[in-house]
Image 1 (cartoon, rainbow, N blue to C red):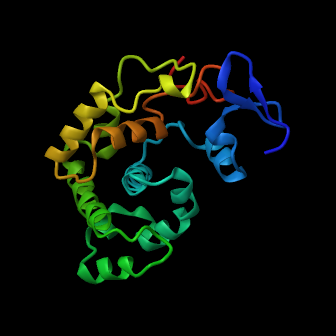
Image 2 (image 1 turned 90 degrees about the vertical axis):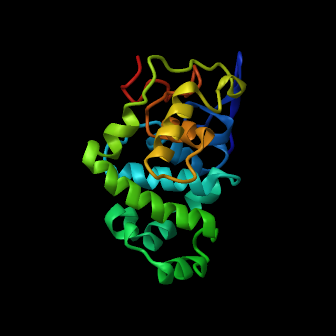
Length: 205
């Protein structure tokens, strides 16, 4: 994007033509900038919203987040708006339909994991539901990164969350994927110090 300048002392931050500082990844194109400015790191506390984010993070594994964002609406159409009840009832016919859908990531293992996770999400309602479960792993502190290199890719809490989800029947929920989920839904704040979005979730001071 034009008009960008590196923030002095924060090499991974750039100031856009709107005068706001963002990490380089969020300044690459309007789609990523909009996602960073309006959604990433904001608290998500509803079941469907968290199931969608968990599913998309699993599909993102090994791919760029931009790829997932471009396909997000197609994912929503393919997976019944990420309604856990609807997805939990998907059968082999649905799997074959999804494998033939060019709008999504056609990976059988990830597709089957999403269906399995929908059923596991439904089962979690017996003990308070997915939102209560996920937010129960919020740590006591959050990182305060000066650079992208300062941001962890996993933590004791994401490792514990991954183990707990697997014990409840979830699949494709490794500790790195769960750390990314915790960042995306506001459980952590890993916005760089100096970013205009730091502290925007209201969860962390």
